[in-house]
Image (cartoon, rainbow, N blue to C red; front, side):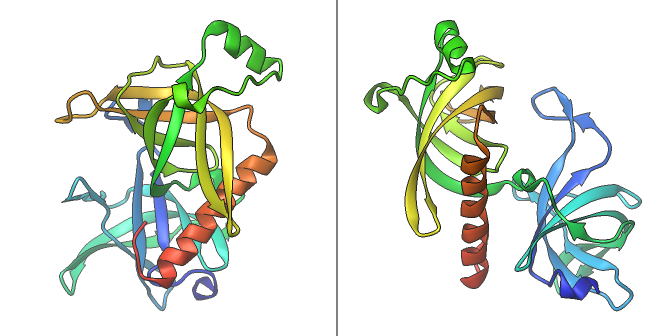
Length: 241
């Protein structure tokens, strides 16, 4: 049954079911990106060992993870347990057993897609933020906005690199363009800063994680559509995220 929904080579994202201390010092859930290496006859999965900063992540045996699979038929979720670690044809893998059945993933904003997209950004002051909460959007002058580069995006938010540090909890106005269903669409979207910090060994460059705020379902669905289309294109041409 599982073979009808996912296939070797499909991308996946694993989230630990136990909270850990993240690099920014906050407590949260660790996420890893990988892919399906193979599906065994008994329904167990072979998953390529995740890599972070060019180093293998040795996932612990008996560790449990919520996994989101990105397949041709859509996105599916299941909880798995790591039962073994192996090396096959110079590829390091983990063997996982399914703890739950696969089901259609409903929170599609979960999957983060790696990308390189230019953007403009402005940090709103208290008055501008209050107007935004009332539904009044004052479109900023793009020429006066700071520049940044989006490095991953999901239906729930994005991560970008900038030359500016932003206050945690502040509201930003983001301006960027995505190809959606063959059409270039401009997004003017508010977002709340979850984390902003200097990138190690890169002077005056900052990594910023933000969560979309006051975004309509239509705009969120368009971002998700962009991610699906880009993922399909990558699989077709054998590219990574």
